[in-house]
Length: 344
Image 1 (cartoon, rainbow, N blue to C red):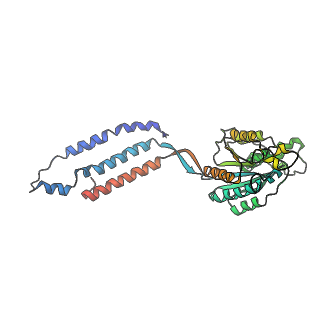
Image 2 (image 1 turned 120 degrees about the vertical axis):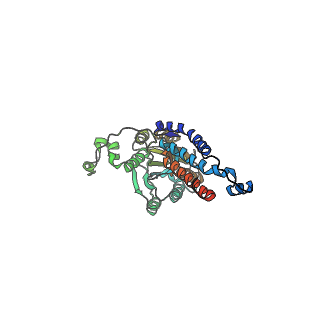
Image 3 (image 1 turned 180 degrees about the vertical axis):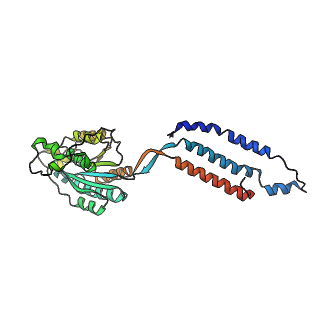
């Protein structure tokens, strides 16, 4: 635990004076003389001796908590995200037809994505980007789960694997004011003339790099079964995400020899580039998971989903301490009224 105003902790030095003041008040009351036929009558009326000290003890403890509140205590607390966006980037290249993950990699990925969406809280926004030779937004960020499920069902597989482009498109969705343009990054000055909206888009925004993974409201989950064959360089895109503090959690789908089942000539490009994908996760502060079967893939999604639903952060807990102090005062006052008919 830390404190926003630690200088006020000096008030805690007054705490030992409170019990001393209480004992002084007890002695100051003196001993009234009463003529009673039996001392047992007095003991029965007053109740156990310890009772008289319980209400003051509770109030003294409440005062101690209030003094602690002056320093504004801060603790690391796990809290649900108040606003969060998750971008799902799903590989739809032809290698997803491989059957090392039953029934196929693509079907397993779709089923796991559906389960992932159903388990997420409704107040978390989700967007879907699909990528093969290029990357496109299959569904813009929304909380409409039926629309997201429809986008997953309507996936069409294509040639190529543009992993870096998928990350860039996700960042463009998360930061629409940054002027991120995939076409400019790929073609530069040779950008196709048919892109008539070039003048309407904001110029690229100069950003101040932040610590990787420090942007808590958003994360990217990237699923791929192969290696980059086209598009933006994967590590360049990963660095763009890292500079903005966005974590990229990577799921490598498939088995080490799964590419041999495809029966295609360029088997090398169907192999899982674990080294490259791990580096993407490392650079951005995310996690890498390898899912060799459908059950493992669902488990990875569930694990990531539970982590993305909450975050641990430094949170001021002054209100919590103040509430506890108020409850102690209320308890002390109530017991005093019940036992002695007055506030002792």
